[in-house]
Image 1: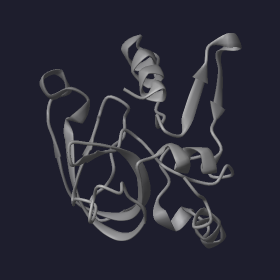
Image 2: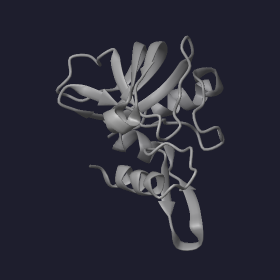
Image 3: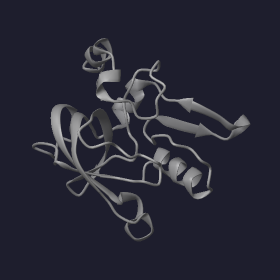
Image 4: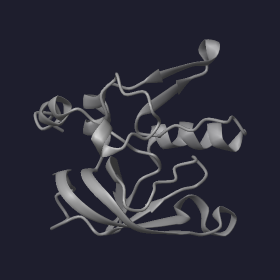
Length: 155
């Protein structure tokens, strides 16, 4: 388990009402500050980054299915990063309703996340410029200049 996911889970399990992505945020409990990670660091820590369109979603019970209770069927419009073990990213992305990440069908997003056993996961992960304050920004809210900058990031 990634350290940031551990922090996210501990915050969620202690009932703090944080609607934040685990790849984008680092919670420091000194003075209860929330610090947003720089986009390059978020990009580098992610296994995959893709501009996706949400085609379909199926929401299951997080009590029985855990932190992978949402299954998004996506269309990858542009892949910016993928694990070397993948020929292409799968169209099924696992997410969680525990972090209040509910993406809307038909909308486009710039998402990132982890991978394991041929599956990709997104528990609220998003690479975005620091000036975009929404927890999960839609693709049209990400400036074109940021997309060009992101293409220069190296893992």
